[in-house]
Image (cartoon, rainbow, N blue to C red):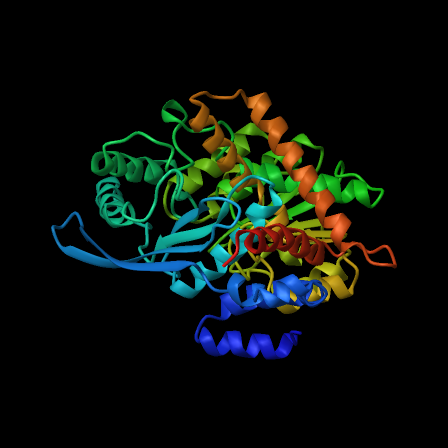
Length: 445
């Protein structure tokens, strides 16, 4: 029998200096430990020990030349965490904050997120501490080629299928895929998030944002409510936020905030027109990561060096990066009457913020469930590549909508307490865990 405190203490001892991984693992294990202790096969098979240890990790040197002809050196990573239900699947992140510990957390989360989609995908994640900000197109090309020269040794269409993430969009995926083809002399679906003209799926850039709104729509309906007419705060303004803003508007909600490192925008009229959405894309493409120009162009308010969680809204969607929403932010949201909080970034809320929202009985959608739309469409892209065909926008959107509905149903089935409150964190963790654990038991060790 497992004791939660003892297991986490040992996990910390074995993984020093990796607080994000410990945070993610603690959240999952706290939810599932009774399920494990009630199943003798899980205990005898040491499922907790096995499921918190990555299958393998790769750390490698990435050498590249900048536009001045100077050699630069970065560190590259790939974490292959668990492939019990399918090949490793997870994004590549280029950001100065990338460390082995942060990628272990993301790959661990990815394992259960992918399980929730019901698609045959295991969990992985990769990236580099390379900073794309301010880099020229040629510098991006040289870095991506160098990174893939090493990464290609460890991936393949039936082994490990990376995708984009923070700092890695269609351009970077294209550069890496081109290098993979040169080195492997094959044209296979080894990366997702590809361009539409060469194997990519429609709606992949928007998929995470679309998916989180489909999940939110199911949440509101489960509480006898509707998304229509709700005011919404969103953080970030990248692909995820962009997709969320568009789908929220389509479903009848009004998004009033976006944010960047410089602060946030409050647009009382709503970020709800194609002109405003296109301008978000222009800001993101300008490579300076600021949102202030939006206020000037559209007559909105710009609040520098602050986060949008102080705005009174019905729904809050952290869409930027992990641990962006603090306990103080959660208290401000509750004080202002927030009705739902849905993580759309991976582990977007700090642990005490998540606990507080659950204590206050606020319906809270965890990232591993609400954020799964991106990897779901990546899985659909893999299927289209394997079948050598391309589905229409309607077909992809219908399949994504159905996947998110099924994820919500799984959370409700495993997370509804006796008083009727739906603990989506518990539900998502148990539902995602059971499928992976059962596969591990059935495959032996």
